[in-house]
Image (cartoon, rainbow, N blue to C red):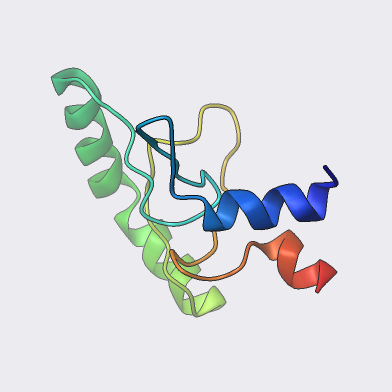
Length: 91
């Protein structure tokens, strides 16, 4: 299956063998966290609040602290119900 077709299928397929499928490139991704991770993320939200505000003003987009990143400083995500950036480019 080509990349374009597989992305179309995955975008429309919501469940597979009883497991809910979610796109990691879309907003609203919720990863499991333990109490320590939740506390750290809340501290990070407070720590980076001013930076997020400046970035939001510059980009005119939603900017949030996330637990999905490990090594990258940031990522761009698409809206929950929109096309991925690559699908926008292809179509």
